[in-house]
Image 1 (cartoon, rainbow, N blue to C red):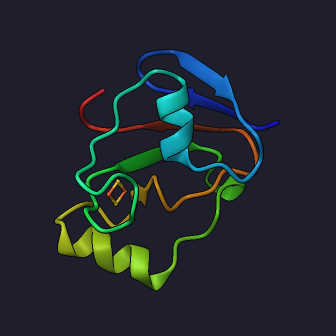
Image 2 (image 1 turned 180 degrees about the horizontal axis):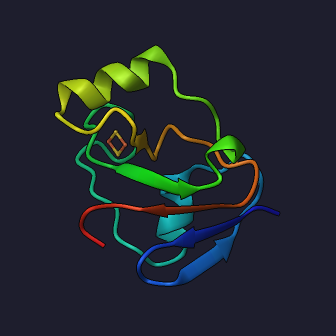
Length: 95
Ligand code: FES
């Protein structure tokens, strides 16, 4: 099972492969900004992947467009859209 680590809290959680970063953070007890309840419309749930970017689903054009539209770094990931398949480490600006 993939292990997701959260910086700077040092929390981590093992999740079933294919769950999203959003689900992992919520299961670990961390807040995730959202006004769309993970429906991939608000773009507020962005996270930066610090390690293991190769272990998550690739970014597509729709995700890149949402990040741009919301003024988020396009190198970030929309956590409710990003599935985890291996170990990774993530952060976001308000943790
Ligand atoms: S929670 Fe709104 S886009 Fe992810």
